[in-house]
Structure formats: structure tokens, C-alpha cells
Amino acid sequence: MDLNKINSLTKYPSILTYHQLGERGRLNEALTEPAEFGAAEKLYVYEKVDGENSRIILLTHPSGEIDYLIGSREELLYAKGDRIGNPYGNIAEFLRPVAERIIAELSQTDHPDWALTVFYQESYGGKTKASKNYSDNKTQNYRVFDVFSLNREELDALLAQPQEKIAQWRDHGNQPFYDEQAKAGIVDSLNLQAAPLLDTVDRGEFPVSFADTFAYLKGFEQTQVGMEVAGRAEGLIVRSVGRTWIRKIRFEDYERTFRK
Image (cartoon, rainbow, N blue to C red; front, top):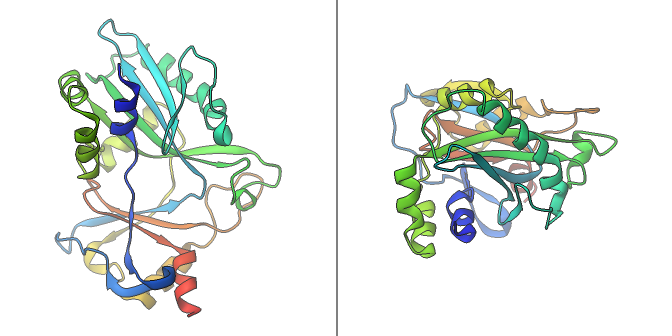
């Protein structure tokens, strides 16, 4: 299997800011590509955890054996049975027992018909830059925030494509992420730690103006995922039920803009 292609198709896409970024990283009043969906649709508001974006990639062989890879946002760091070739962020060393436990649990059940499943999590604490907001002794932890799966036919069709086509598929938002209910179901069934859901809001009631959004953000200033300490949260991730619309709202961006 071409690991460069696996790496490309499982990279996590960038998330747009809720308000437009302007000069010098300051926000504008206008929204970034406003979503076109009903005012009654629910938005799900999660804490944005400040750490290292990471991936646990599960691959089911035709024999039924489950293999795995661990990656950072940009590159693969570890493959099952191999030595850890890249110690970046202590991600692979920390997540390897999590991956092994997932496989052990799935092996005892009739797991769904998929050839590839990717769990995206924020690896935080440890030696990350914002560790002090979560731990006072460099404790490391993770929080799952997204999942998607491909069946055998879908995976084989993608891997038959040139790598640049796979990147286009990914960049055009074609990764089939689980909706809120399905994501919660698989995370709960495997006893994984999830990014905290802070609020659900009707789209028509979610703040639009810069000032109202900042005021709403400040209601979630303390992190919900602290270990020895519970310092400041990085911000919020706001998304529609099927993740067709997703935006980030960070304290840093709004405070920088107010200081102009």
C-alpha cells in the first residue's frame, strides 16, 4: 500500500475562521463564506483544544486483520510493528497504546464494513506550547474531534488515483466525516475521550456580529479538558450536524482585532 497516498487522503483539512481574516491577522466584520442552511438547523459548539493535530489510521486487510498508522497533521510517524521513526510531539509514543486498545476492542466485535477509519484527535499537554493551560507537570492527553471511514471499494478506487487527484478529493471536502450522532456512537463504544461539546444552538440564534461573537466566546474562557490545572481555552469549533459547515473562533484572533 502506498503510504504517501494514505497520508494524503487522511490529512485533516484546514478550518476557516468564522469572521474573515484581514490585514495583520485581524478579523473583519464580514463572515467567511456564510453557510446556506436553514435558521432552525442546529450548530454544535465544541471546545477547540490547543495542542497537536494527530491521526490514528486503522486499515482492515481482506483477511480481517486490523493494522494501524499514527500521524501528525502533515506526516505519518509510526506503523504497527515498526520502531517509532519520528518522535515529533511524542504523538506516536503516546497514541500507540490507544491504537492498540482500539484494535483489541474491535477484534472482539463485528465492526462495520470499512477498510479504513481515521480518528482525529488533539494531542495536548506534554511539551506543546499551551501545555500550561492543561497541566503543571507536562501530562499529555488526547481528545477525539472527528472520524471518517471508507469501505473497500471506496479506498481501492482512491488509491488507484494519482496522488495529486487524491489531494484534490481531500481539498474539495470529500472526506466522508461521521455526523454528530455517528461520531458520538463510535467514540463512546470504544471509550475514547472526546472534545467537549459545550453548546447546541439554532443557527438563527447564533451570533453574527463581531462584538456579539466575541461576547459569546468569552462565556467559554476556561478549558474543560484540564488535567492538573484548568487554564484558558483556545476557543471554539462550531459545526453543522453533518460537518458540511465548520468554523473556528479563537480568543487570540478576536483579542488581536480589538487591540488595533
